[in-house]
Length: 340
Image 1 (cartoon, rainbow, N blue to C red):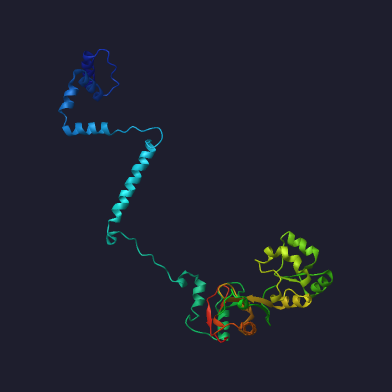
Image 2 (cartoon, rainbow, N blue to C red):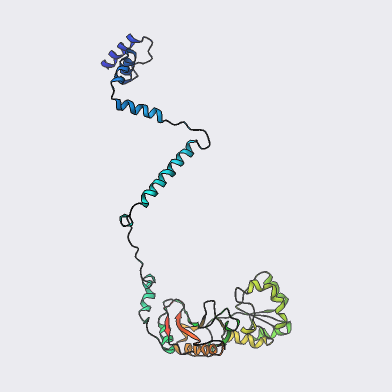
């Protein structure tokens, strides 16, 4: 404090009206004394030339920016950043590929390791390279169901056909002797006199104008729709709703018929429809795991017999390329191809 008092006394001698007081720091008081005595100019002149040049350079490089436009601060900074980015890009392009740092090579696990534990366990029972007989494949399918529910046993057949050709677009129905294992809800759209017969045969939904009112409300509570030929024009305006769901009646599927009583009984007893998709593959469920291998084989034989009858006359060479059997979530089992 004694030093600050002495400095203030010296400052008052140089400038009696100074605004500095004891609240100011010693450095501030000393700077003011040097300024008033003219010593600060001498010290600046004695400073190194390099420092003076830096001070001048700083003063010269201070930019003035416009409020808006190309000379605004924001645009100027963005331009500089883009120039720096382009410079880095050009510099990186000159670096040889060998010198560039590369990350670790990603490790892709085999497909079987990405499956669940139950799937991996049952998949060990299947030899991927082996061709199984139909009976053996179906027996194995009943043992390789990894799911807790009663899964559907599926047959997938790759065909040597072109679905874009009308005569090779395979579509048919077949009645499985042991049923499909599914509860089929059948609807009938027919005159009142046939509606009663349809209900006696087991139809879940049957009607005339009342049925159309349900379609107007987009109420679809059936799996198969059967209609008489005379009533088909009335379903025309519902084609966009029923078609994508596979519910539009079709003569090839046996769902456009005057004998609605017979059609209902067939649909309820296990009649299924199959068709070739865009990849020339036929997918069909032939029953449930709970059926057992024998009943599944009986259904499969009937299906393949039906498939053979659908062979187009224009097919050259083999008709069937490959056959696989599987459950809904189980591994695929390759079957010997004896269906050409």
